[in-house]
Image (tube, rainbow, N blue to C red; front, side, top):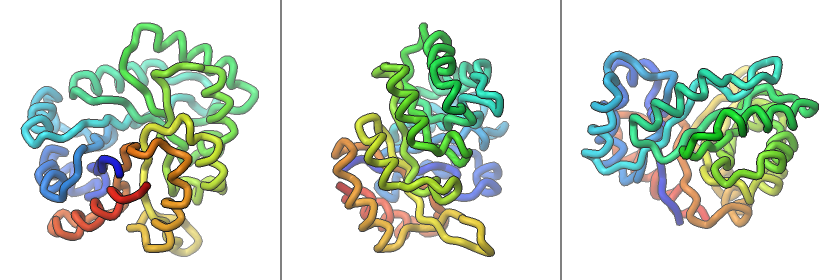
Length: 250
């Protein structure tokens, strides 16, 4: 059993930009979720100032997680320092508990240098960072994530494990759960369907949830889990069913 978060992106980028991310908070609360993941890439004028969005989140008593739009490392394995600091500042302004960020293109040969750069950049930070297995070739590799965590050795840096992203990068979920389970602090949940050979997010079916449950022993029992698959903003009852199903994963 664990708390369920809902990514604002689950309601579709067009609707969220139209309403502002505060516009989906009541739906999230009414569906029984405990938290919201605010997406940096969906921030618009409707979300500003961030202090106003923070007040809206607090009014519905939701936990806040902040999802950074830019990965930690660029295509040359260099740390995106300015973008990371901007995300941390925004997360702090929102009162977020932590920042989720994709790893990006950190190659295996650059792990030690990348870890050193990241530790230096975070020397004065207290906001926890959860690095996600993203949809890039390096950023989706559980071996690179495991090696980076060994090099970092920091309790402030954990893992967001996305249960579907391996379909984009051809990495095995069971291997990722086994190798990264000790560092997992947050789980992104989405089913995956293939349309014309390309993967896409969808609600999980019974088989997907059973597979996830079989892997859950690798994670802390009450690890927060997030809905990152399409939801209908007009159907709170359907969202509530998804929330109930994810709550029971253990």
